[in-house]
Length: 118
Image (cartoon, rainbow, N blue to C red):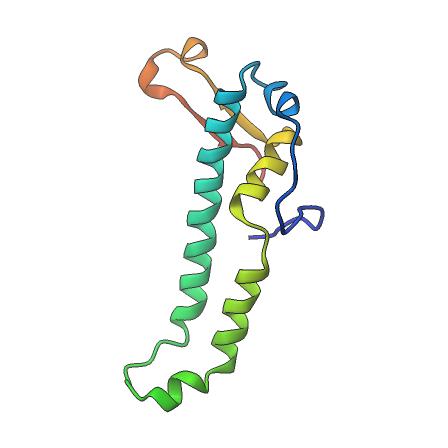
């Protein structure tokens, strides 16, 4: 997953009015952001697990576990990435998250959102 450079890695104070601009309701905006953050988190976890699976060994020798520097570097890289919540907030504020409400869809079971670009 490609992460933008402009996303802060630490916590940033946000203006709640900015979050409510898109939907008119801050709680709806937070729900949308949290669902998107969950999607990002799942995707990052899948990427990390697939990269770490390349280093999987069947040997239970502790010496070999600690010597695998490539695996440690991959893990450190993913630890340094911005948190999924920060990524989701930035995407929402930039208008990259597309969502719909039950009023706009044929039935309430179709409520959800999608991201336009990956």
